Amino acid sequence: MDTFRISIATLSDVVFHPGIAARDAAASVGTVDYRLQRQRVLAEVDAGRVDRSEVCDAHPELLRVARNVAAPTGEACPLCLEDGMRLVSYVFGPRLGGGGRCVTSLEEKQRLSKRRGDFACYEVEVCALCGWNHLLRRYPLNSS
Image (cartoon, rainbow, N blue to C red; front, side, top):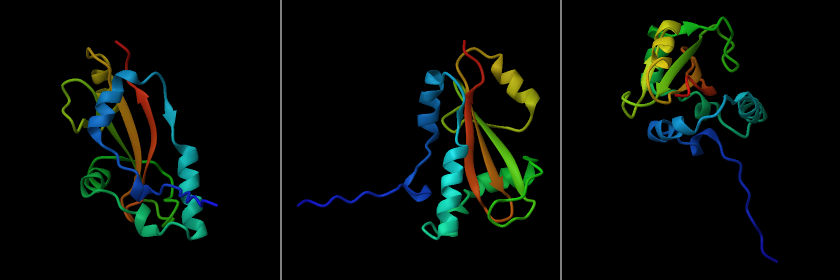
Protein backbone atom coordinates (compact mmCIF):
# COMPACT_ATOMS: atom_id res chain seq x y z
CA MET A 1 0.00 0.00 0.00
CA ASP A 2 1.35 3.40 -0.94
CA THR A 3 1.41 6.16 1.64
CA PHE A 4 0.93 9.79 0.85
CA ARG A 5 2.11 12.73 2.85
CA ILE A 6 -0.22 15.68 3.02
CA SER A 7 1.07 18.92 4.45
CA ILE A 8 -0.59 22.21 5.16
CA ALA A 9 1.27 25.21 3.83
CA THR A 10 2.53 27.57 6.48
CA LEU A 11 3.38 31.21 5.98
CA SER A 12 7.02 30.28 5.40
CA ASP A 13 5.87 28.20 2.39
CA VAL A 14 3.95 31.08 0.82
CA VAL A 15 5.90 33.61 -1.18
CA PHE A 16 4.43 36.97 -2.15
CA HIS A 17 6.05 38.38 -5.25
CA PRO A 18 5.09 41.90 -6.42
CA GLY A 19 5.63 40.92 -10.07
CA ILE A 20 2.88 38.35 -9.78
CA ALA A 21 0.63 40.94 -8.13
CA ALA A 22 1.28 43.39 -10.96
CA ARG A 23 0.41 40.74 -13.58
CA ASP A 24 -2.73 39.74 -11.68
CA ALA A 25 -3.94 43.34 -11.36
CA ALA A 26 -5.65 43.23 -14.74
CA ALA A 27 -7.35 39.93 -13.86
CA SER A 28 -8.78 41.24 -10.59
CA VAL A 29 -12.52 41.25 -10.80
CA GLY A 30 -13.47 41.86 -7.21
CA THR A 31 -12.33 41.93 -3.64
CA VAL A 32 -10.50 38.94 -2.18
CA ASP A 33 -10.75 38.78 1.61
CA TYR A 34 -8.15 36.76 3.51
CA ARG A 35 -9.79 36.79 6.98
CA LEU A 36 -10.50 33.04 6.96
CA GLN A 37 -6.87 32.33 6.15
CA ARG A 38 -5.89 34.70 8.97
CA GLN A 39 -8.09 32.76 11.42
CA ARG A 40 -6.54 29.48 10.29
CA VAL A 41 -3.00 30.79 10.78
CA LEU A 42 -3.82 32.11 14.25
CA ALA A 43 -5.45 28.77 15.16
CA GLU A 44 -2.29 26.96 14.01
CA VAL A 45 -0.17 29.23 16.23
CA ASP A 46 -2.52 28.69 19.20
CA ALA A 47 -2.36 24.92 18.69
CA GLY A 48 1.45 25.01 18.60
CA ARG A 49 1.72 23.66 15.04
CA VAL A 50 3.20 26.93 13.75
CA ASP A 51 5.87 28.75 15.69
CA ARG A 52 5.26 32.39 16.49
CA SER A 53 8.59 33.34 14.88
CA GLU A 54 7.20 32.12 11.54
CA VAL A 55 4.32 34.62 11.60
CA CYS A 56 6.03 37.55 13.34
CA ASP A 57 8.46 37.90 10.47
CA ALA A 58 7.54 41.19 8.80
CA HIS A 59 10.03 42.39 6.21
CA PRO A 60 12.14 45.31 7.52
CA GLU A 61 10.68 47.67 4.91
CA LEU A 62 7.12 46.68 5.86
CA LEU A 63 7.94 47.34 9.52
CA ARG A 64 9.49 50.72 8.63
CA VAL A 65 6.34 51.77 6.79
CA ALA A 66 4.12 50.48 9.59
CA ARG A 67 6.06 52.37 12.25
CA ASN A 68 6.51 55.64 10.39
CA VAL A 69 3.60 56.31 8.04
CA ALA A 70 0.80 53.75 8.38
CA ALA A 71 -2.36 54.61 10.26
CA PRO A 72 -3.10 52.77 13.52
CA THR A 73 -6.07 50.42 13.29
CA GLY A 74 -7.08 50.86 16.94
CA GLU A 75 -7.00 47.09 17.38
CA ALA A 76 -4.71 44.98 19.50
CA CYS A 77 -2.30 42.56 17.86
CA PRO A 78 -3.71 39.02 17.91
CA LEU A 79 -0.37 37.65 19.13
CA CYS A 80 1.35 40.15 21.44
CA LEU A 81 -1.98 41.75 22.47
CA GLU A 82 -0.39 45.23 22.34
CA ASP A 83 -1.84 48.23 20.53
CA GLY A 84 0.68 48.26 17.67
CA MET A 85 -1.49 47.27 14.72
CA ARG A 86 -1.15 49.32 11.52
CA LEU A 87 -2.72 49.01 8.07
CA VAL A 88 -0.27 49.24 5.17
CA SER A 89 -1.56 49.56 1.59
CA TYR A 90 0.36 48.82 -1.60
CA VAL A 91 -0.93 49.49 -5.11
CA PHE A 92 0.34 47.58 -8.14
CA GLY A 93 -0.30 48.54 -11.73
CA PRO A 94 1.06 50.22 -14.86
CA ARG A 95 3.96 52.64 -14.42
CA LEU A 96 4.30 51.89 -10.68
CA GLY A 97 7.28 49.58 -11.00
CA GLY A 98 7.60 45.95 -10.01
CA GLY A 99 7.42 46.74 -6.31
CA GLY A 100 4.27 48.81 -6.63
CA ARG A 101 3.70 51.89 -4.53
CA CYS A 102 3.06 52.22 -0.84
CA VAL A 103 -0.06 54.35 -0.48
CA THR A 104 -0.38 56.32 2.75
CA SER A 105 -3.60 58.26 2.22
CA LEU A 106 -7.08 57.90 0.80
CA GLU A 107 -6.39 60.90 -1.46
CA GLU A 108 -3.42 59.11 -3.01
CA LYS A 109 -5.55 55.99 -3.63
CA GLN A 110 -8.20 58.14 -5.28
CA ARG A 111 -5.59 59.80 -7.54
CA LEU A 112 -4.26 56.40 -8.61
CA SER A 113 -7.77 55.10 -9.27
CA LYS A 114 -8.30 57.87 -11.83
CA ARG A 115 -5.23 56.88 -13.87
CA ARG A 116 -5.46 54.79 -17.02
CA GLY A 117 -4.92 51.10 -16.50
CA ASP A 118 -5.87 48.45 -14.01
CA PHE A 119 -4.59 48.84 -10.46
CA ALA A 120 -4.84 46.39 -7.57
CA CYS A 121 -4.58 47.41 -3.92
CA TYR A 122 -3.22 45.05 -1.28
CA GLU A 123 -3.88 45.84 2.40
CA VAL A 124 -1.61 44.24 4.98
CA GLU A 125 -2.07 44.40 8.74
CA VAL A 126 1.22 44.75 10.58
CA CYS A 127 2.06 44.87 14.26
CA ALA A 128 4.78 47.50 14.56
CA LEU A 129 5.86 45.93 17.87
CA CYS A 130 6.14 42.16 17.33
CA GLY A 131 6.21 41.92 13.52
CA TRP A 132 2.94 40.01 12.98
CA ASN A 133 1.78 40.63 9.42
CA HIS A 134 -0.98 39.24 7.27
CA LEU A 135 -2.50 40.14 3.93
CA LEU A 136 -6.07 41.19 4.76
CA ARG A 137 -7.58 41.92 1.36
CA ARG A 138 -6.91 42.61 -2.28
CA TYR A 139 -9.20 44.66 -4.45
CA PRO A 140 -9.17 46.50 -7.78
CA LEU A 141 -8.88 50.28 -7.56
CA ASN A 142 -10.46 50.76 -10.95
CA SER A 143 -11.42 48.94 -14.11
CA SER A 144 -10.45 50.95 -17.15
